[in-house]
Length: 459
Image 1 (cartoon, one colour):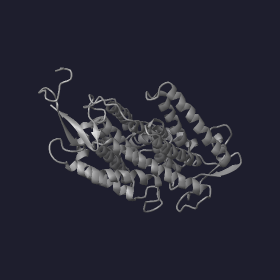
Image 2: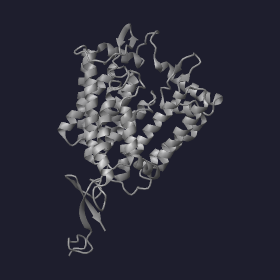
Image 3: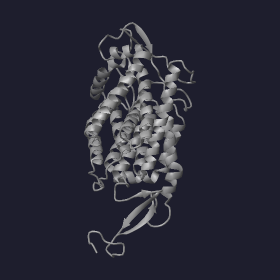
Image 4: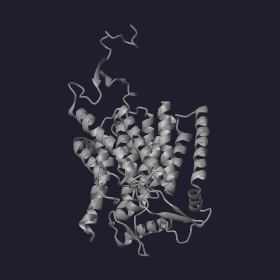
């Protein structure tokens, strides 16, 4: 008998027995597995679709209005309470750091002369942190993550397509493009698309995640039909974002996908060249559509990039981002404990959202931000580089995992121009990424999945 390849009757050979994935190792189907399949997973699927429709499924058109997505988050947190407790043990540096931020902001907000409703923001943020914790300790099948991406791209495709056809006047879609905001450039007054969202940056936060992930899947998915599907969703989403005049959302997706294409080890030699050529052709076709159908919007982007001047009367948040950052830094001398998740007051009398995730945290936590920001960055780096408890489980990540990673990267790039902390979809993606990092990919960890079973090796 070959000792390097022991036969099935060799006493030294490992015993292999089939178990259902998400099943208790010895015995019947676990309660966690039942909850995951019957409630937790379907609720996540519904959520990733609903968020692409902005205020359509909320109880009012206000930006912070509650709706079904709010109750889905609460239900997921309630269902995952046991997993949340485990997450605070296994990923303790990340989630205790986030908890410290929540508690700090809540306490400082309570000390400020603000109405009680001001505590809603830290409570909402706490809900997203707990949501990410619950998802991070759920063991996901690749088929589940694939389904989530398919539904996410579907929500993006439907919402963006309805926005485009309503904007060009082909069909009057109810509750779509009702925000009346315009940009004036070179003597042209060009109306912005808004879709189902009350604010274009809200659309960019959700769409940017789905667009970038869909582009990754369009490039690297093994199925040709899937690549076409994700390409259609990403193209429709990009065109929709273009019509909102939101440069950060458009350019963050393009910038991050360019990095992925150039640096990913998945693409080598002629394949990378073919992808770059294909991307050039697709980009050229999309630019042709823009030039033929939306020439005024192209003029706006040329103006916003500084080639020609915007009209003096045009209000633009671009003029205030540096002022907002400076105001946040100066506020430390006046209120070193921070100002909570509130608007920043400028010397001109304007009160504005921070328009930058770093500015938002500095304004909210004051001097504490200089401790918290590097600590949280180090916690995320350690978790994703495999230096926590399960650093031996370094299974190669599938394309769906690449999509999560680069979608969150684009989200952070967009966060340099917008306050993105309350994007629930990003916290779901963050939890999924931590889950893959913790549990690994079972299809690469010495196991085989066939029709819902795993071949588990026991000693």
